[in-house]
View 1 (cartoon, helix red, strand yellow):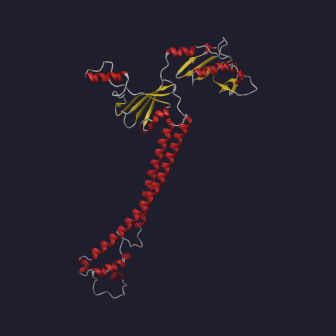
View 2: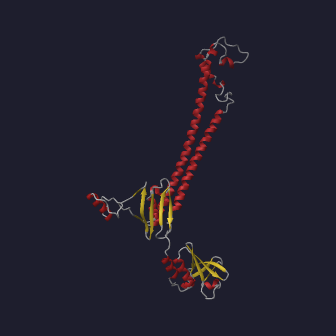
View 3: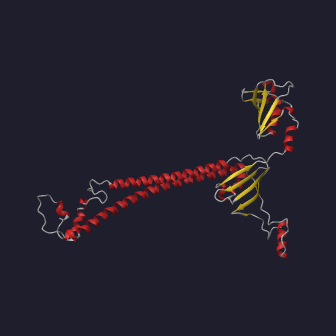
Length: 371
């Protein structure tokens, strides 16, 4: 498969995962609300039954048996009604209490049930608890989505443009003894070291045919110490076509870890070659194009009289122009394109050469001698 197809599959998988998380969280909120309401209703009913049971036990107590307290039905009768001559038996009271439970006070507040709002308060508390749980689930969902977005931004989508020779080191955020080191090559990523829980991934010296592994087998067979130049089986080196492939091979797809990049320093010899190799372009615009390709990512600044102008090469695909005319020099400050550096203003020097400087990787390089 091509890079574009693999990248599209990664993006589709990430979108599917995000959608699955959203559906799961919605279902969690729905179920949490159902459970909370059922719990509130069950507790409310149990408390009512507890109140009735306590009222029955109190009535059967010594006070009621001695005739100190009237029965429930007697208390509910109007003042003009004749009082009963005897208290009901526990069996009669149970039947009467079931009919007259509305006159028992609330277990929590002591009010008549017609004035009690404890059930509403419990229901409101249950709703508040469901809302709290829903907020926790939503916060967790947002955190996962943010983590996915950060991961996709860090090493998803378009492949990062690392310089050849750049060292990449991934370190697990949960265990610093788990890490991987890779080098950017011209055609891919070469992993040179992978360590899990402090142990490196090495050749299997019992089957590998490389020279170090052969020396280890020979030493074991003869019972002799290994050669001084050999400390153990060599580390495995694995080649990956892209950086995304390398990251996906790491634990959890590299999500729980940090990626460090180390750009190789430019040698004095290579820098001298870049600064002294003559330009082959026929026009100022073509020479600027060549310099931008030579110093990739550099900011080109030209001194034009008392002004410092940032310039860059542009190409206008106009059929009526000759090929050399299509290549021009664009000034961001002046917002215009010209054919020659002198069209932007005279140089501060009298030698006629453009005073061009490149700001590149923390260096300020004078390129005037190339014109």
